[in-house]
Amino acid sequence: MSATLQHRGYDGSVEYSAEDKMLHGRVIGIRDMISFGGKSVRELEKNFRDAIDEYLEFCKARGKTPNKPFKGSLNVRLREDLHTRAALFAEKNDRKLNTVINDALDEYLTKSA
Image: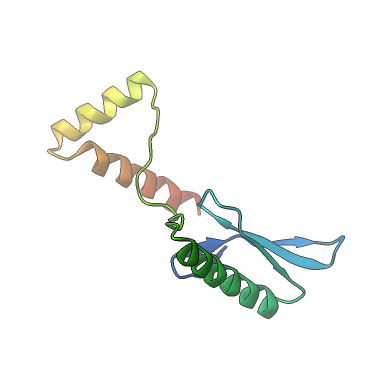
């Protein structure tokens, strides 16, 4: 089961507002703000897809490059001792540091799910 809506490579959050009796969401992982809503799941999903399509059309009409979600490039600051341990582990196991970090994060998130 997915916790987000997905369309054309973009992910959207889903939240329920008891006050409004509405579902709300926003596109996550990009700098531009794209929000959507609906009174039913079907309406929310349609409005999410429409919001993405309109955003991409808007960018194209303006000659603007649309924000790309989660490009896979991330600047992470590690504690010095953790960085050292990870680098030594990678060296000892003939692996790239990025691979070690990816594998460790994947394992952590799989266990936490």
